[in-house]
Amino acid sequence: MRISPKMYTYSMKRLRIVLIGLLLIAGVSRTCAEAADTGEHASQPPKPTEGTMKREKTTFAAGCFWGVEDAFRQVKGVTNATVGYTGGHTTNPTYQQVCTHTTGHAEAVEVEYDPAQISYEQLLDVFWNIHDPTTLNRQGPDVGDQYRSAIFYHTPQQQAAAESSKDRLQRSGTYKRPIVTEVTPETVFYRAEEYHQRYFEKNGGGQCHINFRHKT
Image 1 (cartoon, rainbow, N blue to C red):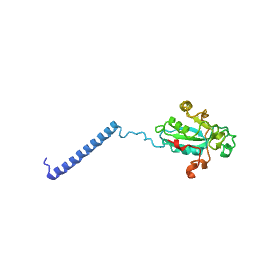
Image 2 (cartoon, rainbow, N blue to C red):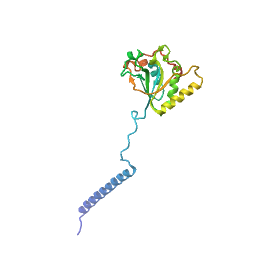
Image 3 (cartoon, rainbow, N blue to C red):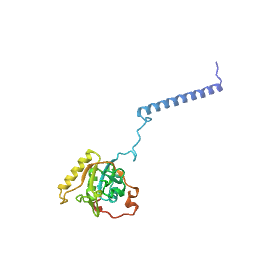
Image 4 (spheres, rainbow, N blue to C red):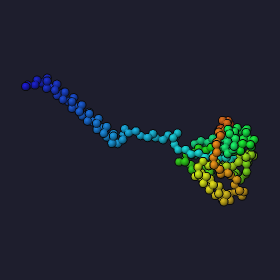
């Protein structure tokens, strides 16, 4: 059978279309197979964001909590500091109640920190350096049990580190008088009234017993 030139041209075009189609199919199949081998399309765990990064907490009492909060907020690695009341027996105490010395609470600061940037031991150094740990229920002009020096540990590791740090400081001879700082387990922490939070920032600074020369 003789094929006309027109039919031959048409057949060749059809053949090219079929071949191109086969090549495309082969390419897509190969791409999918390679992706499966490399895990390219596999679900990947989300990258950690600032909100999901590891954070740890500890709580310190070192006199008026306005200055203590401000001092810790300036420490690299501290992600948040909240002022409040802890270590007492009254539920949801107010500032006025704490000031009556009948609730047992201390003015305290709950410190959140990134252990990848700062260690608990370094936070202890800040704590010791910003107040006088030898004055019982007093810091500067502030007198009362709510101004006592205390470390409220959150884990057994924090307890061991705090007790060891206190012992080293006592033996160092830095202070002639005994260190009266309490090392005690955390209790319920009650966030203080909003006007106490970031007090120095809201009021353009302030006076406090905190020894700012020793901040790190």
